[in-house]
Image 1 (cartoon, rainbow, N blue to C red):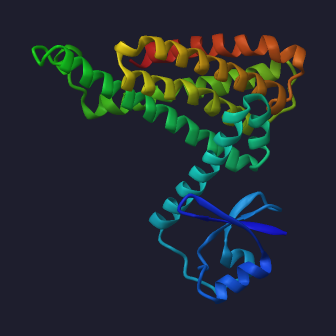
Image 2 (tube, rainbow, N blue to C red):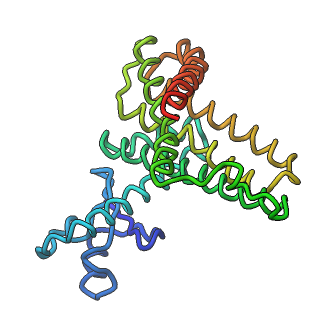
Image 3 (cartoon, rainbow, N blue to C red):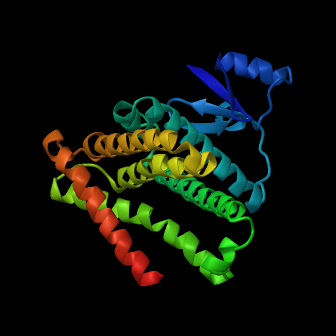
Length: 266
């Protein structure tokens, strides 16, 4: 069995168990190094893998930091797979995780989507103010957001994610898919990623590069549809005959649900 070391986001290896023990003895590796455990399909420390010495339980903040780091690495690994092949890569990446980790990774995708949307909006706001020459501040047109309003905006940003999860679950029920809730969450997060990246790229490029933005829009739309189809057929286990109509049903129903929630809360 060979193992891969992850150090600061870079992968090294593969190494055999004997090599890991030797490098550890030589001081080239630490007990806290992250190692990909193929049989468990998860990242573990060398201490867990080799039965290292007992160490005190780290503080909660460190545990949260380590958990966020591990899930971020999982998300990056998943993106690398379905970015190359949306249809084949999505189920392959989903199969790497158990249900709990798949849900967490799907949530990481949704957070990346929301951060990209917010950054895109801020960049657009900055460029709009510069275009107006400072005569009229965009903040004056939209009004400054209070802390409560900002929190509401952040929550509303997650509404498309929640509505997609519900729509995927509904489609599975209608077309008798044998998938699981974890697959709905994972698929929903993956579907939103191209849209978030598109908004951020469009804000950075600006209106002067409208042709490039149009090309990126086609790529983002195509990737989102292919990911959703793969989520329905390969992850949600809906038959191919059912997956094709399930895609527009999910998109339309999630858009409708999003509109209702946003109007009701805003």
